[in-house]
Length: 554
Image (tube, rainbow, N blue to C red; front, side, top):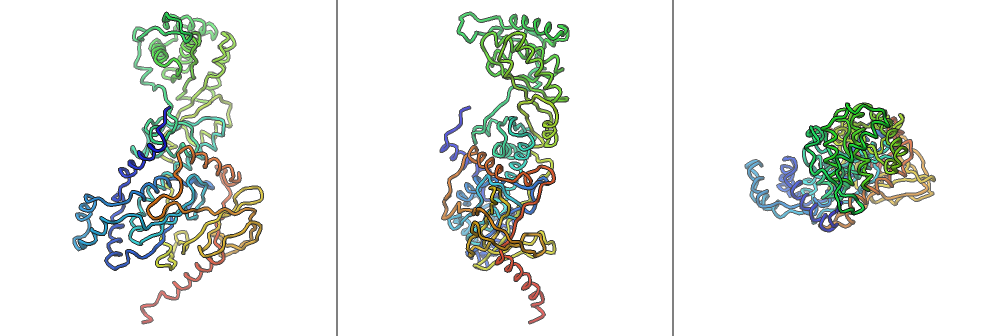
């Protein structure tokens, strides 16, 4: 597959972002709040928001952070057109002052700084993935769009990683969910981020064009059932690979091999579906080096006979057939039966190409059925997954949120009756603590003014959700998780390709301890606050309680 150049790809993707995620792709209340800030003269106040999620998805122990690439392209191109502003005039309340629309027309993200976890990193609930700092009105307006770009990308990327863990490292995984996705953008996003999460191939041609994802696919059942007779095969000849000038009558050659295969397998000639054989012949003549048909349009037994005959004829002419696809029934048992026949043909006819034929399995595959493949005897080389992958049927949303943590240099905190919805105030640094074996064991949130933790030095911290109990830990290594990626209107960190981010995902997952990446009942990963940050939270909570009756005190 020919992939577009990196510079051309970046340009195409930035145009795609401007079309898919214009500034108006947001909630109306972002504009009403921005106007109220502007009306009160607060729109330029320095503020900081954090983006995070509250629970690891799919009942698992981790997530993957994805969507940063598009977030950076979005903020770089963020500005309102005259048409945007005119539409806003029509939907905002009539009391909105004319000067506010002039303010919006000149707005951009030149004053915004974005610090983020690298895309493709393993992340955990309650850890702030991104900090967006800048003028209050601007960073408020970015909220919905950034959440939209991160939520599904991270969710489907994490889902793909779980499928990869369930499948193991040997099998290739094909994403084929475009037709089942939530709209064209959902399908394209799924193809991109499932590849990043660990899938090898996609059926989505546009994803190949935009992101360089390897594309695969051959035929559907409709192609097979469209044929009824060998008379529909045209042309009927094929030239041998060795360059012999005379075309070979491919139908006659295949019929001869079909007789030998039926004798080998003691199959009755009368069970052969002529239309299926015609479909296989026609496709093989069109793509003699890429022959991989679906063989269960009528029955696997019938389809396998026809495949072997056509594939053996191709081999005689010097071509190498690819394999078969199974799309119904007991895939494990069928794959074992198919492989047995391939080996018989290889031995009986001395055709070594039959030893390397691949078997593709596709049949409403879920994470659970993927895991079960490893428990049963099977010969499946490639698994195609659609609906359960791209729609994330086990969990429809990651639930990322975007919360204010500082205004005018003062920490801000949401205090809720539901403790899970309370936020952690103040601008922060986030550090990942690594144990002596190289596994992450704790993510530590510290105030930005604090000195970073040091390797080999004990520290006291407060794990979230542990009722104000402190623990003492000594990291063997300390990694600062977030880095500056956008400032003064410019992306300050190299934009990675899908392939580079995919490699980052696998590297990050390999460092994770097996107990944290178990698909079922994983151990909880610890996320903690430094002593100073914990004390700030306690102080704000106490102050909120003391000030609750301020009206009565005046």
